[in-house]
Image (cartoon, rainbow, N blue to C red; front, side, top):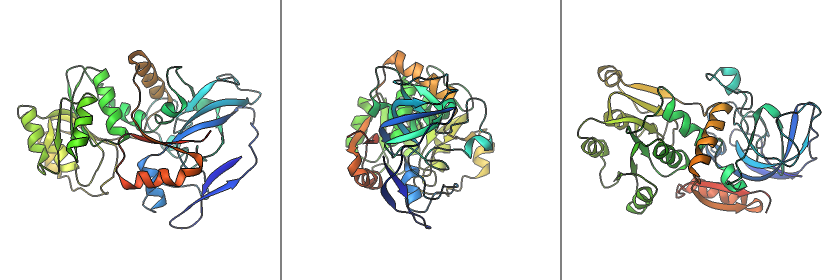
Length: 337
């Protein structure tokens, strides 16, 4: 089989190589990969800016989907021919984010999906609904589950609540789609009028162009009659966290899901204390959350927003697209092409 691996070094590169197809152990599932998708952290690893532990010479990408082609002798959850994806943290079935779950991460600490085959423990594998293609399903494990978790991390999202999303990346768009499934009102910020129109087309009630309105938090407050939103999905980190807090109502929740603009931010403790805000980090989520998400998506027939699909041979172009920041939605590599 063909597989892409990181080269060794402080700032790794990507190398395509030929390998032997792995053989399943008793509890393993061998999946023929049809599609895999990229997340911001995949580029951060290449840039040497990812803070977590990364497997030396590992296969990248935590997100993918494919067909089961072989199973170990003790496997009971799936069979040959099933269409599947997998939880990003293979051993995290349910409950809170224990360190032992987070230390086991596909495409980070263990081999990921940017290969023609992947070997998975059966407890990580999740059946796909029939209405989703492999390309669509491959976009879900990290971004969509993070959005689901972020919207429900402290208290469950309620119909009629107001959610603020930031940008047009995978987590932002999944947050918009999930919030609308719940009957929530969605406000958004983005960098261009073109992107703003797309966000409105996808269900955002109002969108603020933060280049036109640098003090966008004031616009968000105006849109909520000075009260602020119930929940914020903060994706950029350094350049947004203070404004996110200013946009949130007293007693509201800020879910920090990313660091696309940097690791700083300087949110003053008094802002959190005086307005009783909850600032919560998210860690993608367990398998049961992924399964609940798929059930809800199936009921509403929600389709992910796919920016562009690249053939396996052009995987470097997929990374370049991610690095450009010009994408709207998810970038997918069609491994089967």
